[in-house]
Image 1 (tube, helix red, strand yellow):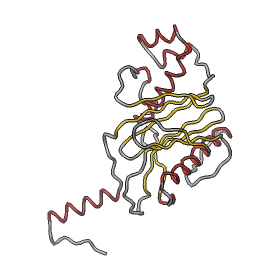
Image 2: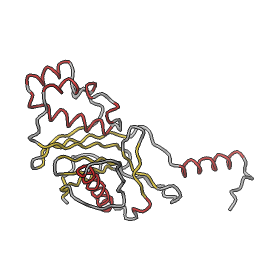
Image 3: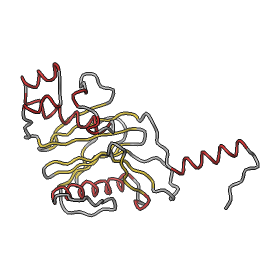
Image 4: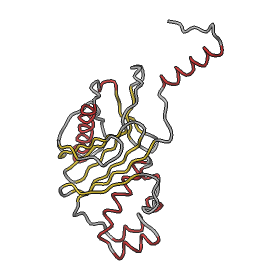
Length: 225
């Protein structure tokens, strides 16, 4: 496992390792998955586990990985543990024989994507990721396709939309978030991040707010034990 230097900005932790057979508290069963896909999942979740330890969160039994309706992963305290302090946002990516995880401080969303530096994107896929002048540029400079794709993939992850947002609609010259791209050994890395605009509430938060509201409405209100 290796730590990758984080870009300037909010607190981040980026870890990478080779894909292999690993175990973690966050593993999930993936029905009908290939052996390769299982190893990728295991490695990503193991990196997440180790990253959280480095972040300073040691009682991982109180945590679980959930997914939004768009399938974006996020961390949540398990209902009933009554843990309320905010958690880092997470993003995981893998390619060839490498996996990477990125954690960012609470209050931000992050997306990371990695691709082999020597990967070639065929020209018949260009119109699925770009349009207009950007598409014309790709036909002229096809070697730029991989960088554009990793950038857009990182943006989709940071926005928690996955492929529910058309990458053709992303204008890299007019972004509302931060974006960096760099190489690490033979891997191209893109990281995007932005402030959180909506804060989700867990069931304990909702219950506490309901109790507080009832107390304000009725000073004689009591919580039974």
